[in-house]
Length: 396
Ligand SMILES: *Cc1c(COP(=O)(O)O)cnc(C)c1O
Image (tube, rainbow, N blue to C red; front, side, top):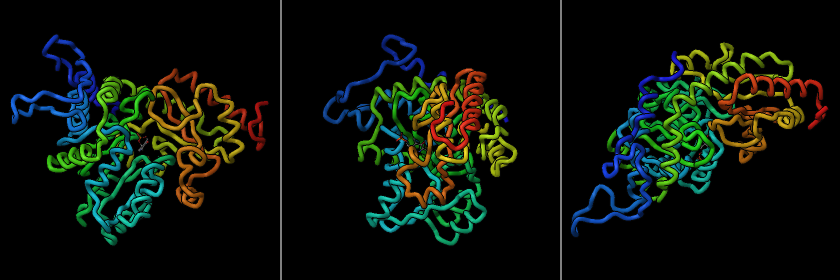
């Protein structure tokens, strides 16, 4: 298992270079124009109106489709815009959706709202569990939505096995690959129908632009995805597309650093007395370790730790200097968050508990700062937790 794919590393750097024929600009300009001239009344060019198509957005779409090995797709204004457009493309009245019981909070809200309004049915299940394939065979969902590694407990779902079971009952499979990026995992290689992204995270990588994408395996699905993104009006703006493309160029290099920092950090702090549980698929003790080694190119830089109580979590977050307390992930800077009160706060307490989200759980997005600095900071914070016992926000 290599940390990056040499071909992808070349692809991200070279994508779309030399597209400007007027001045030979190495990096193409941003096409802000909303409208494009016709050559006569019936002479529609490649682009006519920017919601429907835009050269800057198209450059990003082409790069992502190439990285995933897909047939086509679209870039959207947000990751949730991509999820919503995909729901419109795939679902019809009365359809059943299978989604992970620990899926992204916004995705949980989307499917729950569609079910509450009577449009669909949704079942939140553990797709990483041994009975997932049997459940698919028994209940015939129309859409199986996969997130692997899952959020925030990094459970690993067998993409190939779930896809085989889903296709056997004519279900459509979509993988939200946001936690991995196309550098670390290519779901289409395992036969899935759609890959969905919040490009806000690793793909743009600098925490300065919100965006999403859908990549489809077939031309027909790609055309339908584009039709729905245009119809709903969720296509990405030229400026956001440009920023995302700018981030994408360093994605392979960033992912290698994210990964090695996570690996070193885990090696340094696992076994610390303040950590009651550590969730990272790279650990041999992680239940999904072997599967992750098989279907991912590396173990990624998202990990969660359980420090035992909300008081201990409060102490740790207050003590850290190099981990910003914030939602989101995948930027160059290290972040820490409390799923129970932040990213997954929209889930009722019982749903949180079923997904394993405890008050002492903290999710870390490991950035590309110097690994020794990150280790020293997290180590000192964990020592503080031990020194404070159960007193909240105790800073010694
Ligand atoms: C952030 C995120 C989303 C939503 O994306 P936005 O760009 O915030 O709309 C969806 N899925 C996962 C796994 C995410 O982390």
